[in-house]
Image 1 (cartoon, rainbow, N blue to C red):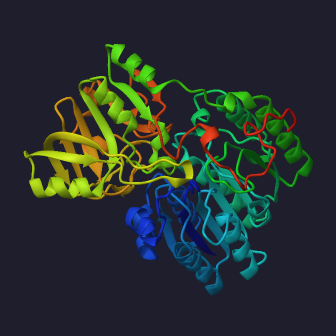
Image 2 (tube, helix red, strand yellow; image 1 turned 120 degrees about the vertical axis):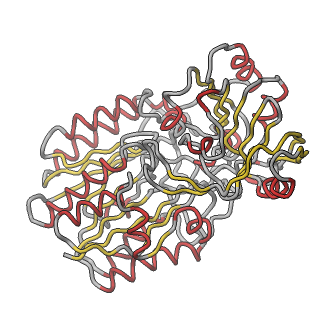
Image 3 (cartoon, rainbow, N blue to C red; image 1 turned 90 degrees about the vertical axis):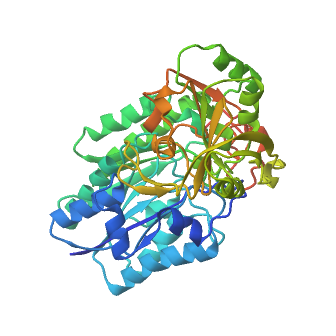
Length: 492
């Protein structure tokens, strides 16, 4: 058979001012045709798993595109049309089935349901084509996504360290369906819940118990896949929020029972999905009082992995104000600062207006740089290969990067957005994170993939930014209502 294998991934924060154009995809992780195959073959991604399984079965693979961008604002019409166009053209040329590596929370200028619209377009060309999809744990599942695929699955980990496993699982379901060995049917449901991503770590409650329930379901050979989607609450559109999906072998009643059980369990734990805040000065003060490091400080409200601008300086400024010593920061997005440091050269002393270059009108927050003086410690091209358990083997780029050493704080400054989920954000620029007392990370949960075992303590720092967990400053206009916790409701 001729199988289409493609990737199109973006987690869209509709409150983010960061532009998501085609260059953002192609410069971070975008490849077309044979280059897509070469870039992701053998990597720890669903795309890589798809290639291995299809080829092991003796099938021919077609790889029209593999594209991903760091989370940011709405995907431009040009970027969406380019990526979907590559996939749809390959379908028109003739394929027997599709294996898709998608995110599940893409909002484009032309459609609020990026993935559902793609799937619907594929089925419009080839109405009966079998389609398997791997989604992120933060998928905002829609009826259109369900109606236009054969089977789907989502990650069971956050940070996402099981990409290969779940991609492999759903690919095998599709392969069995192609042989007539199974007949996938799906049941899905949505509690009225807009859960917060800070409360979705797979080692934390309530997700730990809910994910264990999906694994219990999958012990039944009739259950082909069971997924709890935490959802992505910063994509303001109708279907944003939590959901579940159960795929069974022809047994609709079994799928419905597990769907209902999971939805009820998620709704029963709704309060546990709400994050409770702590004043920033108190959090940093607690960190200062600790003696054994590394101590992880999470600047989660400016997490580029959820669409943050990565240049809000609120938490860094508080760390400097309280005089924390032996700190490494990853990372501040400021191409102008990198350029100034390149001009000055390694070893030079520079004074910069660092960060604060981006206004955030959706939350009425102006960019505010801070004045920092330090030594240019290193300069790199920002490219490196991920060696940790998430995105294993993938070549990523932070763009031209630099390290500013203030004497107490070493700040990694980048020209492209990149979330610090792997030690490479430090080691690639010459910092040994394991020997630092403090690691200040613009991350929320993904940091655990590379840094979870390294940190002796973890302190969540409630700064500012468009990835805030404070719903009171976010103006939701499209999400279905009533929904918890925006509305204090008691029924699902």
